[in-house]
Image 1 (cartoon, rainbow, N blue to C red):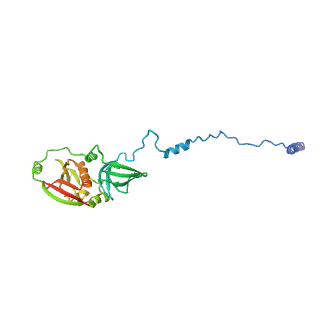
Image 2: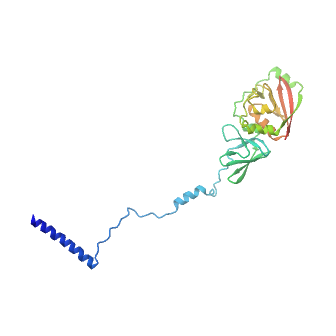
Image 3: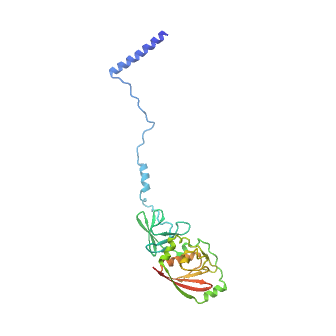
Length: 267
């Protein structure tokens, strides 16, 4: 046991002596260093290029998505507080007032007689009435139209009877109020297809335009400005003329008798 302790003491003394001599002679063991598992990849700028593409202009040869893509103008109420009835925003046509957004970032600036003007990120874009189709065609098919039927004898007699004339006036402000109350989108409320052609007022209380024009339950709209009204979708023609023209002639059947109401649109 004594020999073992003596041996351990000699080893310790020898290691200490060697360390002391090394320090005096300037010798040091190499410093430990951390080794990386893999070299650092150089920044090629790829991530920056990806980020830049989010905000960059469209690449050459690749057209930008049109801000008005899918939108169609059905009717307008022109003026400082104008309103545009537009399809393509939701399932049914939507009334958009000046100063409101049709889509996020697409704000209606003004409504003219033949177009709606929007602001898209500081750029002015215009949505005119489509040249390829009549206003009635824009919403045709949204409501199933009844198949044309032969007119009952009493209706044929009514069409052949002399047309009585009435004069009326409606202010542009009252027409504008239809959209300002948010009801212009309910274009088909209180209306139905009439079997022999035309649009019947089934509930004037539910139909904003019928209320403004003082039409009655049971009235059947047959023509507007000499344009024939055949089915429910043609109500867009009625909106179209009342939103743009200064004079509108509406021919209706009332109590089985033809009546032409000559409307004057006042300021």
